[in-house]
Length: 297
Image 1 (tube, rainbow, N blue to C red):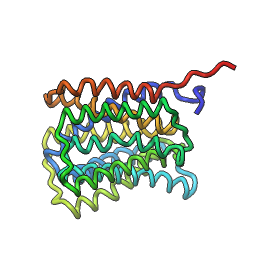
Image 2: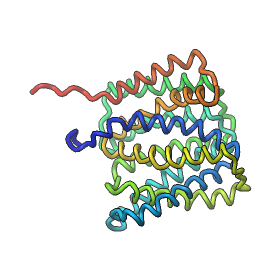
Image 3: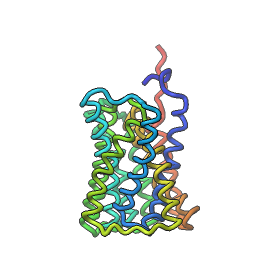
Image 4: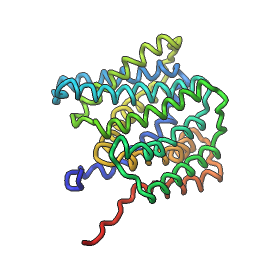
């Protein structure tokens, strides 16, 4: 979109997205102490659907036009809500450390940069490649300094790679085939797809343990509203209005921001090596997202 047609509020979207997405990992850690991973995810999606369904009836937003638009929305839900989050939760369940999972997920902007010219018709110049390299180096420094990288669990590693491929595919698919429709409509379709996948998996793979405690309810409320309703909507909107390689570069700042939230909420210290990693990640983001100056005619 041209600057004239881009909503003004979208300028604040990257900062708000990072705030909600990064803090979500800390909140998720609290919630998983009281529930099995896929069971917790299925309950989260069920709550989102229960919120959106009455809104759909009251607001009556436009429905997708034709089977193709329905299919595109469902595919994004399958890749992001079902694929990415299921693989993330299962990776943790099968022995992958949070640091190892975050390191693999931080490779997403590199994959986007490689694949965007083919699937999203975007060109990634040298300046942005330098930024992507600095970003992934900074994210890796933060993760290595903060947590041990345990990749000795083959199944956990497999699910972590699956999560990386799902969010990369979902980002590129949304950029190329994204449907311009009301957020209530698109979110309801995508989370219904996610619930339809996660609930049977939870029933099949887990005893479906869940303890209805205050911390679990608080974590569930935050993830439902902050992550599922607001952060995902911001992410998909930014992808539609911008370049996929620029938007995906925001994920370089997720490990540093998560480390800061973990310090504030859980009291987890930030090692000295993590601070230069944060600076590198921020510099990489600056190079990737900076718009080149227009040449005078």
